[in-house]
Each structure stands twice: as C-alpha cells, then as structure tokens.
Length: 302
Image 1 (cartoon, rainbow, N blue to C red):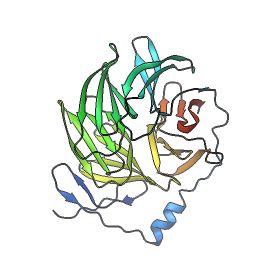
Image 2 (cartoon, rainbow, N blue to C red):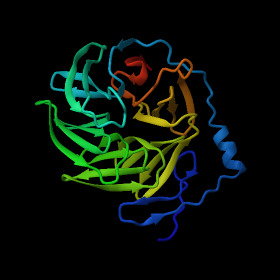
Image 3 (cartoon, helix red, strand yellow):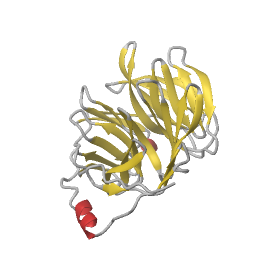
C-alpha cells in the first residue's frame, strides 16, 4: 500500500488508480489546478493539419486495423491486420495482408483464420497478434499459428509491443489493463489505465496511449508524457528525431514533441476517414495509416 507522487514527463502530469502485477496499489495525487490547466492549454495545437496528400493509397482491404513495418528476409514489407467483420466477433474471418512499402498488395491472404486481429509485433520469425481475448503467435515463414495464449478476463485486446528480449505486451482497451507474455506464460502487468490502447517499448519503459493521454510506465511509476488528444488515442510510434506520432481512431494524427506539446497533423473526421493503429518507418520517415471503415492504407512522407 502507500502513496506515490509522480511529476515525470514533460507535461508534468499525474495519473491515479493503476495497479502493477505485484498487487501493490499506487495512487497518485491530482494537482490539476489553474497552473496545470494553463500548461495544458499552452500545449496548443499550434499548426493546422499538415500531412498534405498521401504518396500513395491502396483500397480494397477488409477493415484494416493496424499496419506493421516488417523487416522480412526479402526486405521491408507491410503487415496489415484485417478484421473483416465485427471487431468483437470470433468468426474466423480475419487475417493479415502483406503489402509492399509502395502500396502493392502482394498477398491479401498471407495469414487467414483469425477472428478480429488488431495490433501486432514481431519477435524473430514469430508474429504476435491481439485477437479479441487471446494473443496469437504465428510462424511467419510457415504462415501458420503456432500458439494461442488466452488472457483471463480479457474483453478487447488491442495493441501489441515487444522488447529486445522477446517479452510481449498486449493491451485490453475495455478493461484498462496491459498483459505480458514471458516464457510462454501470460499474466497481468498493469491495470487501472482506462482505454489503454497503443503500446511502445522504449528501453526499459513502456509507452501507453490511453484515452486523451500518452503515458510512460517506468520503475513502477506511471508518468504523463502528453495530454489533450481530442479523440481517444489508438496507435503510437517513435519519431526518428525524438517524440512520437499518435493516431486517434476517429480520424486524427498528432506529433508529440519532447516537451509533450501536441501538433495536429491530420483531421479527417469530416468526412470520416479513420486513422487506426499507424505504422512508421524511421529510416524513410514514412507514415502508414490504416483507414479502417474506408478499407485502405495511406502512406505519407513526413
């Protein structure tokens, strides 16, 4: 038990009510007073959306939810998760499409037989996919499922991230939890993070996009990196020059700088073109956006 106050993160934010896997509850004070409100307001969306026109776009996909830049034996390619149906239905209709980095659909049926696949991460030659209530492991060379890890109490597993040692994390947006797979055993890593979605491993820290906030979990403490997204955050990617790209499913993409300031790069809410779990290649500075209900992927050079 006990209380821990965090003032880390450039935004100086504080989060409350989360628990870690050793069942030690960490409650944070909430000094959201006038000065904090002023600071958040000063993180202003200083620019109008500036992504411009896409370098390319491809249509004809089946509810694409996530794009992952994959360094395959043949070179960089894109893995795109396709829900193809209800995002909570265990219907066996989902899969993973394979695209070139220039937008050619190389194999739309690269992996089939999933339910409603969402976020992905690759460890060696194994692809890990969030699929409603289980984390699925797929041998990329054989293109076959090799393991499934049901998550007790899971409702809506959403994003996946992995560290250099092969530890795999998966978020559950509906329960506000992050689970972890270590040596074939899955357990709850962190709870009490409402709308936990996008995940990113940075060294020994875990970055979490959740609701209107971007968090960093490090040394048992949950810090606010940035706050103020106009819609619920979805994907998060690290920028080559530092900072982050954050997408909101409803149709927003932000740049978050090292000071936690937000710059709106895209607003496609009207007419709605979704911006789901984005992919990013720092070597080419190219952003890949799955458009979900518009059934496409778009590429932008930043």
